[in-house]
Length: 419
Image (cartoon, rainbow, N blue to C red; front, side, top):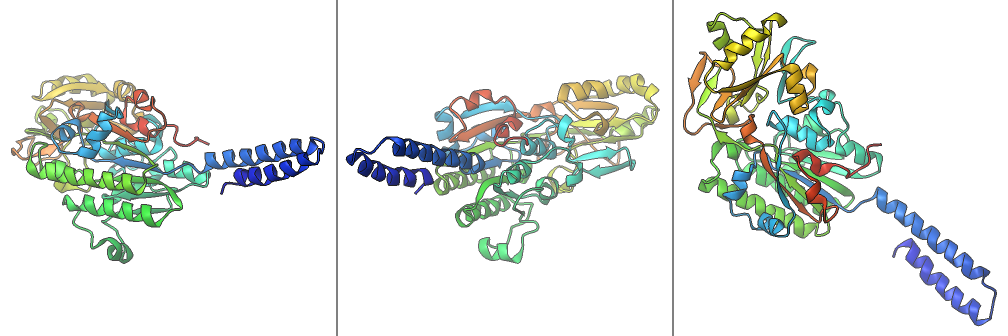
């Protein structure tokens, strides 16, 4: 029984006895004092120990995947008015968007500008996977300062190394211990749809067996989206099962606030440029052209993405390089570093001198030749054409909450104070 309720019951009994003897009212004043003191103590506790919060980031789950799938639990949320189509951030790749959702801020603040970047200090192309690169506190760190325990679950181990700071425990099927295998089963391959089901089971197991944890963050993999189009039977089956697990989470934590979004969609791409080789063939040398989609999951997308960061050998080459890039088939626009930083809220020191944007069919990456026609089953993202994603909320922070959301990263804003 709450402290203030116990005080209330106890002092009401005392008040009844005192007033039956026509005692003075000082004891009643004392009663009010202690009652409101108890209430104040509980109010303070409730602000430090909120009810359960579950954040689900469904990797690659664009609007087209939702609309083509049988997902009754998500459909019920939409019918209840807690659904919205929003924008993800550019480049439309995982690490940048996941970092924004997990820190509640834009890339210009947290510093993650893709899955890879060109390190101007080491002069090397590097993966953006180390937490030292993240320049803003995570939800887990903010919760930790308030005495709130949290857990991170991700199908991809790169998310664990980048975002887990402050979490009580971080679990990935790629690095799962023997103990987790005994609880949930041996983890499937990262290149499967079943790996997402394992992850969901691990999260639900923890929700049942770790009552002291109040914040759960779940991040799936988009390998199924890179493999199957939205209308395919395999994709529909995968997402129907994901929807089932969302329903199970709701059953296990019926009072929890559950916030769901995605980082990007995934589409077929038919053509790829190696921009460094293409420019060299046109008598122009650059330092490097880098696809911010490139990560260690080469089987997903071969490292090809819908935009590219171009680093010049000489800043004076900027206009001629822009001109030559715009002459290439499938190049939709070329932005300078200041233009790209302002338009997409990117940290200037972690992007190229130029940012090249492809059309709906074109990606950029490293090839043996300057260009390649891609097979009909090739699917990727990274462009402006993969930025339409859904937002869903169960037990939202307020009835008007969904109307305040315009970007995917905004779903976690104001869950915890910054300091």
